[in-house]
Length: 264
Image 1 (tube, rainbow, N blue to C red):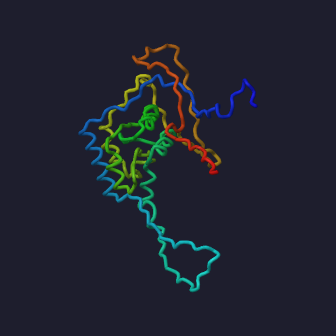
Image 2 (cartoon, rainbow, N blue to C red):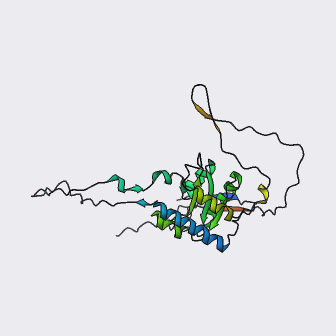
Image 3 (cartoon, rainbow, N blue to C red):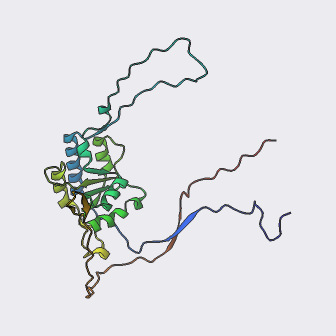
């Protein structure tokens, strides 16, 4: 007999794990891109990639099925000669690939390290909050960024990939080493500026300069914190969204499987 005050096991329901957090008071949105600029950017990128021949190639190697250890074949099978060419797999131009950041994860890491000079994001990304963090990152780093419709559809085919949700161009030590310098210079004037009122007047972060020591070792030069001015400047007009508490469930569409009934 169960205690009268305590619920039984059947009455106890398993609670789905959820996290509570506040919604952001700032509404960040991508600036709209004119249709003429969209066609120009897509055409410039596609022509550049096709002329370079940058593509990821994967050669599938067919392997024979493994046979069970217990059964031994009566006649030993003849070995099939397989020509394995490692040069066929991977990117056609590794040096040019290192100057690009492909995908949301790679672009985010490059932005955090301040390594990009231009960022293009596909507009068909779902859910949309997957790329919202790139707006603030690119603004604080001073990197031109915009949302381009049909980016994945136009760029993924020349690159030999299934999809390209984000494409970033890395900084180069010199203009001679940059393969995409002319492409970036042509696209930059077409990129609209991001409108973030609460970040207006903020200076973009500069890349960390490297200095040589007497021992020959290099280390990142520490950034010096500037003293805050006593005079308080007038803040720009910015509409804030009301704070709300939201619950984040990891996988709300997941259906729990019930325990199978025992057959009598």
